[in-house]
Amino acid sequence: MIEFRKVVKKYKRNIVLTIPSLTLKPGAAYGVIGPNGAGKSTLLRLLASIERPSKGTIHYHGKPYKKVVKQVRKGIGYIPQEIALFEEFTVTQQIDFWKRISPATIDEAFVEEMVTTLKLHKVMHRRVSDLSGGWQRKVNLCVGMLHKPTICLLDEPTTGIDIAAKEDILYWLSTLHKQEGMTLVYISHDRHELTSLSDHFIVMHEGHILFCGETDMFFHQRSYLLEGQQSTYSSELGKILSYI
Ligand SMILES: Nc1ncnc2c1ncn2[C@@H]1O[C@H](COP(=O)(O)OP(=O)(O)OP(=O)(O)O)[C@@H](O)[C@H]1O
Image (tube, rainbow, N blue to C red):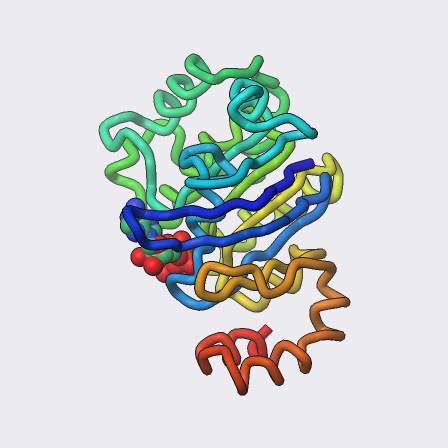
């Protein structure tokens, strides 16, 4: 379980995120939605412990992140939006490198299943720089999950890729969630992806969480959120809420 307690994130003097309280339940799949600049990626970077709150604390199974950094790094996988790979390495070299520096013992059967499900066998001997964006995204996902995390944070994992690659990624994430009970927190702007994978939504706007709860509850409360939208929120958010 992860808990935010009175968290504020500032860049210089600008407050970009204010989260008085937030609890992420183990085994849930959270789709994070909101307009550009709402704070979605910042939320994921804080969860991944890549960045620290300016105020407040984040707790991992009841303990502050800074006291359990190793457990956090072992338990959490973070797949950034940017491709974070060595371009000159082949896919095999890439995977071997990240396995060697992994903070956790590698479960080879898990890695093999991931490589197979993502169909990476087809490109194992090719250099990353020679792969299309879709393949690079799959490899990016694979290296971020090599240590078999229990919580996976994904920043727009399927943006800009073709339908076949997207379906492979969704199938893999859905398998992990349903069969292994992996907690997912992922940012997406894709309705199909959000409705097929999420059992919870986090709705963000201007650095605040407007809603965090089960998807059924979201659809039940959407009209109230939309009423609020007319008076206070931007129309951009209104469009996003109606689109899901
Ligand atoms: N490193 C940084 N330094 C300064 N400001 C930042 C930094 N990172 C993010 N911000 C600001 O924080 C706010 C939230 O940004 P963030 O990237 O988290 O939003 P987002 O919801 O993920 O947006 P998008 O959908 O466009 O990716 C924005 O105003 C952004 O300009």
